[in-house]
Image 1 (spheres, rainbow, N blue to C red):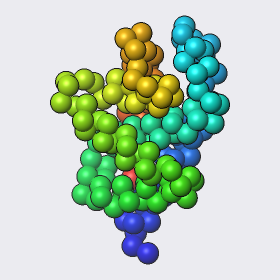
Image 2: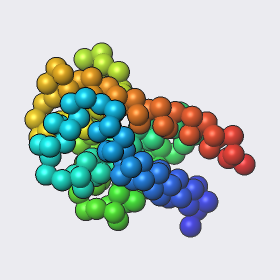
Image 3: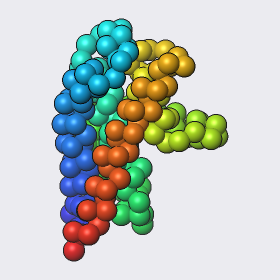
Length: 161
């Protein structure tokens, strides 16, 4: 196997594992710190759905914040991410594509990536478009992922060799 492909697969697995772990552990923190969050989750079927949607959001945030780490081979990295997601859940790669399309569609509205990302999470948890009051929670969710992965890639780049 090509060394670059092997690195892509390795990093895809790592960002998935990190996103999954942070997703599963995030719900309690959000419920404890954000007023209105319990009402939002109450409408969801179960916490597994939260974990699924948040994992996809985390993987996407990591992919988008990789700053040039894989700039020359981003299509190979994206393939590795999709392959990793498919191994986890047959719906995951499709959800990742849905999120990517949602972001592409929303970017023309001059919104921050973190707000768009969080809005996608809220929309998928609720099953309907976020209300005006939901956008505050959406921003916090988006910031959670952006803040988590912003420096993560800088650390990876400094340890690249």
